[in-house]
Each structure stands twice: as structure tokens, then as C-alpha cells.
Image 1 (spheres, rainbow, N blue to C red):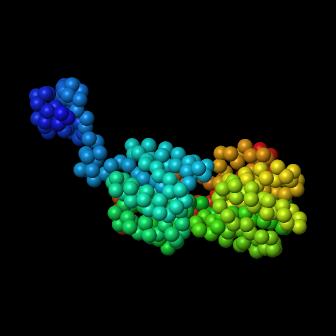
Image 2 (cartoon, rainbow, N blue to C red; image 1 turned 135 degrees about the vertical axis):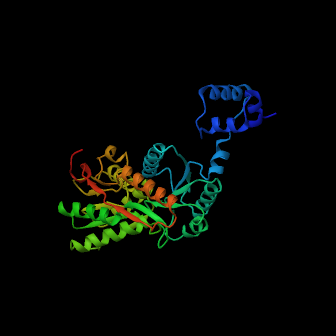
Length: 334
């Protein structure tokens, strides 16, 4: 039979209230009583239900986080940063992968909310399709969106200025003499894809560069980068530069170019976005737009804590400026 708190109290010769104070640490108890209660608990094999205690207090000291694809190296970097910041406050992170599927995303959202997480951090799969599941729970659980967001949805968001970042990449290759620039990115389902696409076109127009080259939109994966590189190579001539929507795509482009003996940067310049860990290890090392993971995580937790403290806090949208990292894929040095 499982020991109860009353059994511990009888064994220790103290009141149930004293046992509760010792186990929860809610009030000062003499060292002698602490030792007596703990010894009784060990002897009886009593295990205190910390979750039940947390629920009685109205908090579980847990935060749920959902990312669209844990296999994308950018998302583990964000997760690690969020977990570090949470760990400093004594809270634990429950992580889920929505597998780029809004139906699975809804399952993960409902599962975490059902487990009474204190707040939810989410990178939405879709700028429009993710709305329904978040609307189901926003009145029950504080939500902060990070990196991506649902359009016109009343939840806090923090991410980088995607438009500014892609603009910096375009300006960089243009400063090196590129005029014919191909954009390779993902279809316009997520806010990141949309804003990077907008940023590319706006920067090209601002610099007076033609938008004659095809814009190749697929997925944020290296496999798509390889396919896109093949498409580029079937054209009449090589463009001056390829600006990619993320580093995974760029790594795929670099790999296919190398396989087909296209020299980077001598024959064509290539840039990425995110500065994942492998960007500096690519062949050649990849010029990219760096996302400040630690700053994103810190702002994310700050927004979540503010929302948990006061549900009526005005909604905030924080766009952090990314930075250009120049490496050998555009002629820089590593």
C-alpha cells in the first residue's frame, strides 16, 4: 500500500501540518523536525506529489514550447537558449515538434495546455492555418510567438526583422557587383517566408536591380536547395548571386554547385539566413544573416512573464535587428 502524508505524520510523531510544511518548505521548521519527517518519509517510501502541490498553488513551474521542425538546426538553437533562460528561474521546458503540420500542431497545443503548463511559447507552422488552434487556448494560457507569427492574432511576438535581414544580404552582394540575383526560399506559408520574400523584392527595387530572375520557392530544407540549384543551372547563364531564405537551403545550393563544379564565390555568390552552427563549416563557409538566439530567448521569457503576471498587458511585437556575417561564399575570410 502506498504511504500517505498521514502515515508519515504518525511515524514521525508530528502533525500532518508539520509534515506538509517540511515537504513544501513553505514555513520555517526546526532542523530536528525536518530530519525526523524526512527520515519517516524515507522509511515508508513516501513520494511527495510535487505536481499536485504546484496545481494547488496555481502554477506548475513548467512552460511548453512548440517548434515546427526540430530537424531544422535553427530551432534547437532557439530551444536551448530558451531552456537556459528558464532554468535560471527554476522552471522546466516541455518541448514538442509540430512536424510542419497544423493538425499535429493543434494536438501538441492542446496536450501542453491540458498538462497545465504556465505558458506556451510557439513557432507557428502557418501564418494563417495556425490561428484556429491558438484561438482555442489563448484565454486559458499565456502565449508568446517567437520567430514566426500568426497574422493579425492578438498574442505577443518576438523575432528578428526578416525584411531587414534579407535586405542586408541583397545590399551585400550588390556592393560586390552582383546585378542578376536569384532568390531561393520557401513558399509563402509562414510569416518568415513572407517577410523575407518582401524584403528581397523591396531591396532589389531600392537598389535599382532587375527582378527578372526567377524566384524559386519550395521549403526551408537543404533538399530544396539542391533542387533549386539544378533549376538555376538549367538557365541560359549563371546569375551573379543566389540569396537564400535560410542556411539549410544555402547549404543545399552550395553542395549541388560544388558537385557540378560551379565555383563559389568565383562564379556565383551565395548567402544564407540564420547563421546555424554548420554555416561556418560549409564548403565554402557561408555568408549569412545571424539571428541573436540569446536575445530572442531573453525577450521571449520577458514577454511571457509579463503576460503571466498581467493578462491585460498591452500586446507587444518586438523585431530585433539581425546582423550580416561575411564569410568565403561571398569572398570574405572565415
